Amino acid sequence: MADLISTTSERPPTTAITPEPEAGRDTDSESNTPDLSRWQRFAFSTTHGTLSAMLLVLRPTGLYWFGRAFGTCEWLVNFRRRWRFYAALARVLGRKPTLGERLQQSREHFMRSRCDKLFYMIFDCIPRPQAETMLIIDNEELLHQVVDRGRGVYVALAHQSSIHVVGMLLCLRGYKVVGVRDRREGGLRRFIQQRFDRKYPEFGRSRIIFSDSFPREIFRCFKEGYLLGSAMDVSRARHPNQKMEEVTFLGERKLFLSGPMWAALRCKAPIVQGFLIPEKNFHYRMRLVEWLIDPEIVNDEESAIREAMQKYAGHVEVFLRENPSLITRI
Figure 1: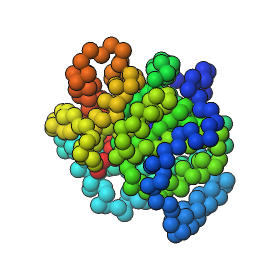
Figure 2: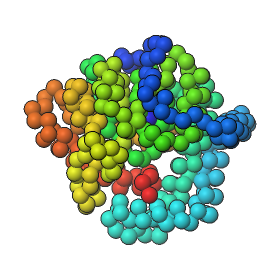
Figure 3: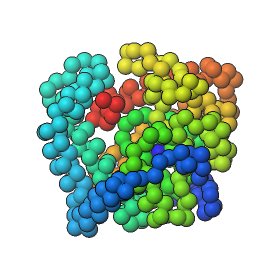
Figure 4: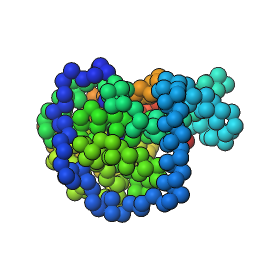
């Protein structure tokens, strides 16, 4: 799923979710998603209960620092993952990183990943007023501008930070959110989504569609005014009908997924790019960079998509070099 400048918005979003019996439900997606096994439900429930008890004692700030300490322990013992990160860091920087860079960025990567997972597990235990302050939106005026058009919004994201955590925080802020996932998503995400549904039934379900769904599902989301976010830095098509666009990324020619951008353009939905940045004490920031495509001023769709995809790749490259600890594709 899909952090979008103040911790509390003075102006409520115009696409606030209203309670509709089956609004946001994707029956095709849900019917093909396996239910949790008894063992999965027991394991996740036990872990959730343990972390909830720790939250009562340590509070969010204490649990955050526990997560960083735990991540440091993982960093010390998981040398294989460390070496994979070193290789990814070298590709992003375009040179051999120094010893200090490898140690600092890899340790921060481990700590951030562990804190994201902890927060995801105990999200439903955070009081709603406090959870709403954990989302900071940079360039919020741009978000209001595109949402006000009433045609839905496509936010082009990348594989960095915790997209699903930010998606749930956006729901609390009143946005109609839809995320694109792999059909083989892990059981933990389904477990947390079920808990989120039970705690906030007035929102219905933040909509989930799968990467191999028919395009009509995406068209329907834009027509209903959803804010759709997905990672486009995917170099492997999971379905022969998925559209790809070749771009220059980190000095190499790569194929990135362009299908959602085509769907947004056909629906006249604004297309912007965003980055998700985890911050101290389980706070998240969503930085909206700029317009990628304004559908109202497009003359040549193919040229617009090609230019937007290259601009997208360029922004991702710059962002990762500025924030190397947020590399996730290792």
